[in-house]
Image 1: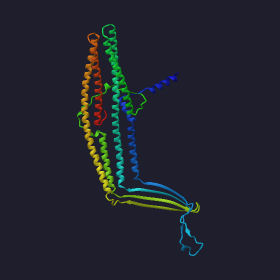
Image 2: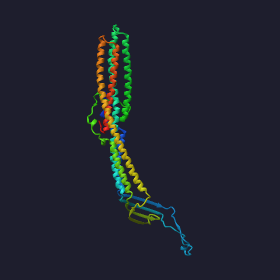
Image 3: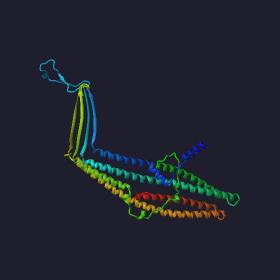
Image 4: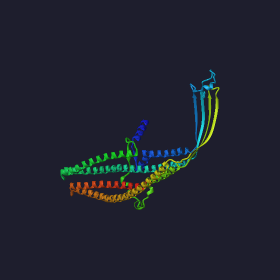
Length: 435
């Protein structure tokens, strides 16, 4: 019996949906997002690229084994003069024995290659580039999660408000039906409330379905299994909508934006590419050493071994290539200029983005204050109208009108709150820092 209870308890825990706050959702996405995983793979790849580039400047040691057995040994014909009139003299000669085995060991080491050191610096700089790329990917993903999380929270809150409105309206309808049966109100009064109630229930179902779609979109953004349960736990009304004054008035911190730092790193890489094209004018010098031991014989018992050892230097000196190196150098300079121009455009676009985000946030915040005040006013009007209706000094038309004004104010408040939260996130995103 105890085992059965434990099994049921474990299954219940496994089937229970996970509950995510906004911070937990962001953390989950950072750990499981495909883009984040790929960015981390790029960093690991850059580390291996540095090792690969470094290895090219170190001695390269190779061994070799070669065995050849001639089924028919090649021969060369001899001139007739070699016979000197002897009819039994050979007419051909072989310079190769049936079996040949060679074992060798060789090493090559770079003594000077200007491109090696430039390439090594570029490989290390690419590691910094991919670290910045990871930061930019994290920043983008966080914004995507926040903007996917807010609609779920908004629709969840909206469903809760609609449930309260339905409950209040059902209570009022029941009271009105009782008054109708007592002869104090008309059937029209009951019908108006039934119509409003039906509309509310239909709206509630529609919002709930929208919430399901928004939740699936959030799961997709988090790379969370679509078939598993998930709930959000934050309270929309308790999320902070205020920001510090410096975010609205301080100078724009351009270098907080990782995409600008990415372009700075790209310019650095392009400068290294220019150095690489200049290094093509320099000679390259390599040292070689090799040793081999060779066996030759018609069988493996009466052959002979011949050792060979050599050392050498190899130098390649560029002399003239009809302008090819010069053209590559100029193209590298032009490519750098394009990135500089791109950086200038990005800096201007960041300025525009920050200014627009500040204006949008201020407008959304002001609107939120107005609609919040309107909501409080609509709630007071609705409560007063209900009291008047119950006391017999108000009409059902007044109830319906106050009800519609309340629902409209509730919707306006939720939309304004959502827009303010999104505007806040956009502003922090434009400023290049997390919320």
